[in-house]
Image (spheres, rainbow, N blue to C red):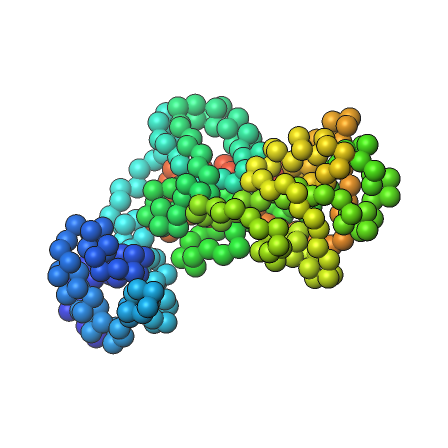
Length: 316
């Protein structure tokens, strides 16, 4: 095929179609008519020799070939945008740029204070807008409306760039007067009432069901692997909450170590090793290929990685 005969605007059409999986919504996104978008899909099908999107009972669904093309199309569009964008020098000390960052409550408690202190010194006029996972969708990230996400990800689109900031294990937090504090073994752990805390990924969260422990995350999955289950009395999405709730002498909170260590000076609380194996997890930073080469974005990513490295080194 001669590339000179290909309308490269079709790649933009394909990108939006695969994201929206709807001809109507894709047309609205691009500001064109629905017939024009339908014609664009027809031409794309001819170009790639594949239906790309097929109608199912759940709506339009991308074919296997379309799923293979999606990250490639994103990369081509990002490179094209880079080529057409002037390479301006970013001056952090004078910049008034707004950076929008999705962070989990865990990242806010452990990493964000360091980021803010650094920026107050080096870029005092930069504005930071921190969003929760419920505020953001993958489409927001993909289109560059959100600069980056700092979280623990079970899965993330293959087109995104990502880097691991650090690994963290788990600790248990409980009141010194808790009856199980002295003999804190697996049987004691399972006899207690527990505080569940987590909020990862994107999108609006839903209420939790204590009877469906398999979907509750690392801790309960680790217990399931040894044929055990804990009794959860409190569900929360905020990592600051368990430290307060663990003041009750009949509750145990199992938390990332960096969160638990923040309570090390509290005379009423104890930090214990979990009496069973829980795999460590990774805190990651992810961003869209559309922002990968942006000079301001590169500067902020490097700053965040440097602060994360210092925090990780301090724990060794």
